[in-house]
Amino acid sequence: MIVGVLGFRFDHYSYVRNIIGKVPGVEYCKTKDLYARKNALAHLVNRWVKREVLQTFDINHQFNDFGLNKVDLLHLYNGISYGRTPWVSTFETILPRFTKVVEATHGADPEFISDQKILKGMKALAGSPCKRLIAMSECSATMQRALLAGFDRFGEKIVSKLIVMHPSQELLLSNFKDKSLDLNGRINFMFVGNAFFRKGGHEIIETFKGLREQFNYDIGLIIVSDMRLDGYAASATQEDVQTASDFIGENRAWISYYKHLSNADTLEMMKRVHVGLLPTYADSYGYSVLEFQACGCPVITTNVRALPEINDNEKGWLIEVPKNRLGEAIYTTKPDRMAISSAIRKGLENAVQQIFTDRSAIQSKAEKSLLSVKLHHSRENFAAQMTNIYRDALD
Image (cartoon, rainbow, N blue to C red; front, side, top):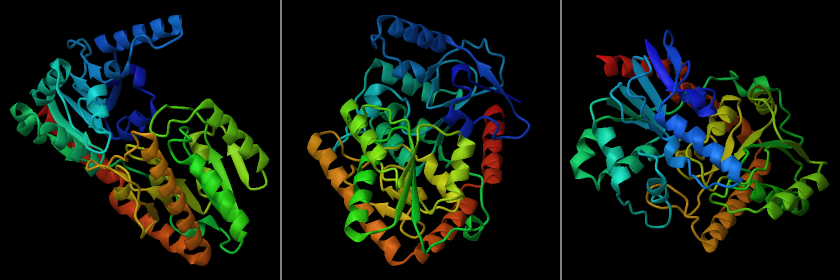
């Protein structure tokens, strides 16, 4: 069986994480199409004029090769196809993944709209070449159903194709004792994420500094982040980047900073720390949480999007933040973002105080994290289910 994957996304982490190589015996093949060419042209123009005059977000999530790629099946990520080749799509938020649709999930009272492009996308999702829509979480499936409620003409057909499959994750340790960590000395925490401010990095460093000073907690912090600004949710500025960089530089006694580490090196480091961190404003899933858990690290996270499905107070620490009926944190206005920031700070403080009050909780939560990965994110089960999806699509 030959499964086609977008060529310019072939090495993208999300494709590697969810699609490429997941089914034994399947040949995954790079494909090219009309929208890939449009995307390349748009990027070329944007680089030439040194600003984004042509938006690429919607282009990235559409596909049509007019059957020129000789593949049995297409497996898209966050995408839809207008062609006749059978296709399935794994998605992290909602389909069709267009700007107006995704933005409609934000705010205190989400409300979806329609236009000709969205209607065209719905027709593609309802059409016979679309065989299966794979939501990465129950949260994503809920969002999809909420959108489809406004499209009676297509809703039933599309919902019948919808399933939930969480990403798989290989166990990287058998048990917590394999980490050989001392629970009586410094407790080392680790943050991994390039979108430092959106993922709660600013709240982490300030809260941890306060806890060290107020309670004399022996906290160590490892940060792996390029500090990029993504202009999403947290609304940080270049000045914030400089302030955070200066702060980290001034606190090297307890903060270790890496602008970049390979995935292999990151995982090895996770095996040597006590607790993972993802107190994020916005994340569609949170791969790093699964990776921490697979390394025997319980994680402190917020309760947005898919995170309550993979983390809870039994195997980690869950910080509740204001969110809407679709599970998205409410960060539209400055007061909204201040409320989230305050909730994250209080949640981090409570979690760290619990840890230093009862350090044995690290081991008990770590063991439950490892068990959760084993039971709910098995590579073998994922491969078997995906194999059936591919076979059914070509039946």
